[in-house]
Length: 69
Image (cartoon, rainbow, N blue to C red; front, side, top):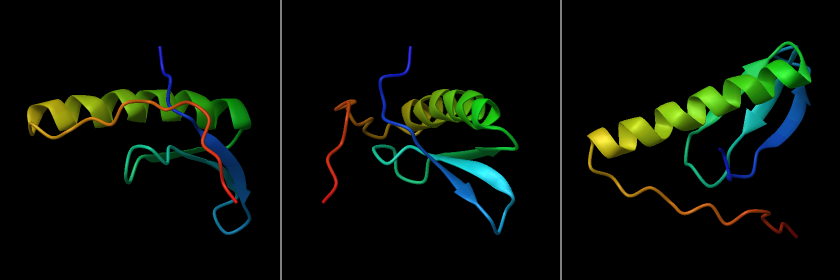
């Protein structure tokens, strides 16, 4: 189960919802619907973590809700 925060926003340029996972650098997904973006983000989070393990890189602990000013 994913515990990383996912930020969803609409991109007029891409005509898609963008799902950003700020705690995992470069981890983003998109989808034509909000639900598709979330589903794709879950897949990408798992792939990001698998790749980090293969490369013996640090995997940040999920902090939950992030606070932005």
